[in-house]
Image 1 (spheres, rainbow, N blue to C red):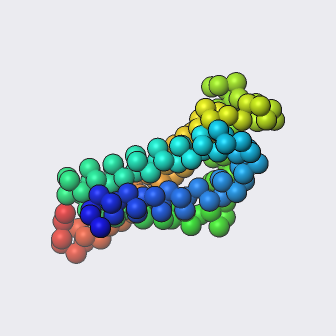
Image 2: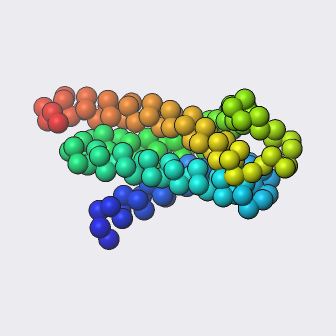
Length: 153
């Protein structure tokens, strides 16, 4: 498998692991095909974004940051065993989508492609903030450890 295929496969797995709780809690919102497709398309957006970030980090030789980003995604996925982040991000995303689009979660006729795509993208952005905070902490610890060992990158 080529490098690009590996990157997209890795980020497909990591993003899907990060949305398990969200999909479980929002399964009733995806009762129509367009609503389901809105969620799936939103997920694909994040797979593409993270894969492209990973590829750019590889091209720039930022291996430590690449590993930290993957670690941040893994730790965020594991946080779903205590799903506070996922639940808060989901609730905030629904509220934000309602403000931005007039989406009414209680109205099944408004559960369409666009409204569920917006909820998914907003929730993904909120969870990405957590991923990036954890990534920074991992990267900082990796660089500090390397510096103490005298192997600056």
